[in-house]
Each structure stands twice: as C-alpha cells, then as structure tokens.
Amino acid sequence: MNTLYDFKVGDKESYTMTMVDADVVLYACMTGDFNPIHIDDAYAEKGPYGQRVVHDMLVAGLISTVLGTKMPGPGSSCIQNTLEFLAPVYIGDTVTASVQVISRDMGQNQMTLSTQCVKDNGTVVIKGHALMRFLEHGVRLNSTMKKIYKAVENA
Image (cartoon, rainbow, N blue to C red; front, side):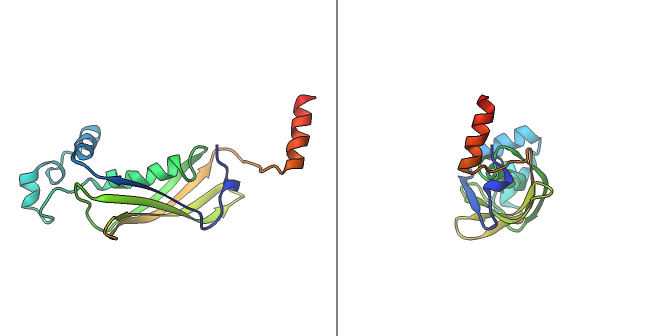
C-alpha cells in the first residue's frame, strides 16, 4: 500500500488504451447511457462529429485507472476530481491518460495531481485535477528504525 511519502512533486504515471466498439456498448449497458451519438452509426453520421463518439466518462475512466492502480494506487481515495472535456474521442482512437503530482499536503495526508487524456495524434481531450487522500499515514523507516521496530516487535 502506498503512502504520501512514496511520491514527490513531478512524479508521473500513465495508462494507454485503444477505444473499441465493445467498450462503448458495454459502457452504455452498464450506465444506461444509450444516447445514439454513441451507439447508432446512422444517427451519428448525421450529427456534428460525422461518426459515433466514445462516452466522455468512459474516457475519463482511464484517469481513474491510473489513480486507482498506478499512482497513487492502493491506499488512496479520490476525494475531488475536476474534468474539462476538450475534444471528442472516436472508436479506434488510442488514448493515454496521465497524471502528475503537483502538490503534497502532509498535514492533510493528501496530494493534488494534474490529469489529462491525450489521443495518439496529440489532441488533448480531457484535462483536470484530482485530489487524493491517503487512507493511512505512512512513515518511511530508515534501516536503523527498521531494526529497532523489528527488535521491539520480536520482544
């Protein structure tokens, strides 16, 4: 489990995924969002984008993947997330979600990260921030402290 002490300002992590039709259909089934702009080719072709678009929140979910599994990962919880949707994502697009630590608040046991999703052509499709709280206060132990802790534990 990670603690706030495991990270420093500037640390980065990312996750990449290619959006496929099955992702969009499954997301629509899970959420009930059957807006035809997402699931109906004929309807979407007549719309402003000329083709189906991936649900914005499905794309934003890639940020959640990074936050929940990579950085900060287990031992943390997202308590605030802001998102700005800048451009559409289409079926077949490859998107990379990335996060970067921009501040740490040791007193509150939390950190703020910038977040973004970028298509493989360089188009930023989502940008925002996440505030993550760590579930436990972690303390980094140096080797001497570890020996003392182990001795006390075994006494």
